[in-house]
Image 1 (cartoon, protein in one colour):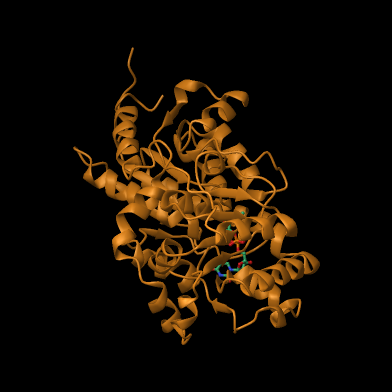
Image 2 (cartoon, protein in one colour):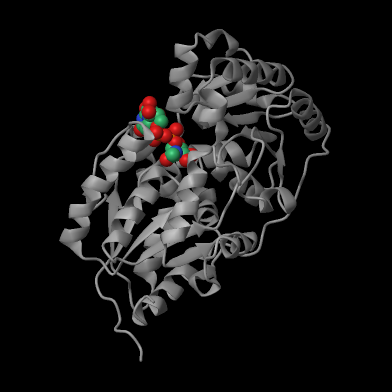
Length: 382
Ligand code: UD1
């Protein structure tokens, strides 16, 4: 016996910056599917500053959210609980066909928990990634969301093995590819030049004309920026790198606050480093595309640099995106000063990783998701 098709909109959840570039192509693919899949966009408000949210909505041509839960910042418990409390009545009011979550932020898990307890099917995009580091809040969010989700879309084949190990049935999993790369490919032409980005912040773009080019830095992981000694030693090493290659450093609010709080501003040298506030999407894509190297602890940048063929040094001990190391341009350097120096020297000598673009990182992942989701909802989402 086949179950009845599920009707109602797909309730799409975003909360924090890395969700926005994943959701934009999904919304377009749902609307472009024949027949269209109606969608409702919910912003939990986990990220709320104009630079962390509104600017990215504009850059990515995301529609204004239908619902904004305006939860704001807080401890993990407070933030997760607040999303849950505010999301429940929205779910009751709108009776969607399913809830679609992306990535691994607190909003992803919070909305998943609320939905499954109401018997609402949950779809997780970017499922099955594992760092096997339970100290990362995102790892907890990933493991729990995948346990609870009904339909799971993966970005790389290794994710299926992770899910099977945790007892997730293979029938629930669909390898769709990387929606973040859909966004990258569709926006690359519109990206702002690095020079224009520096100029917009009153910084002379002449520093980008260094014979070796320039590097891009982003840092925001609590494990790198919440402890004064750790942050101080990373910034000291970055200052050393900047003597060989000018660095453009886009500062996340968490990092900005901690540099101020710990009194570390003297480690940011304006002669060799362009210090910028959090950047918009088109600015970031432009900065990365023409960079000699990227130094980061972000998950998204590891993937974007692999797709762009730009060498990436990841200041972490592990990655949940192993394909970026195995096939792409990523190297894990942790906080090992010697490893960082060796890798920087190799890249500056033209011996950086070039890599190749992984399977299904082709700009069509969201279309594959829309097609599969349509069939799955037609057959009763079971
Ligand atoms: C969150 C995600 C992380 C993601 C990152 C991208 C979780 C557990 N973490 O981390 O996976 O890589 O987003 O940015 O969900 N703040 C502002 N303005 C804002 C938002 C935050 O100033 O618009 C400041 C606040 O001081 C806040 C701090 O940043 O306390 C941290 O924000 P939060 O959302 O808790 O986590 P992120 O570090 O941004």
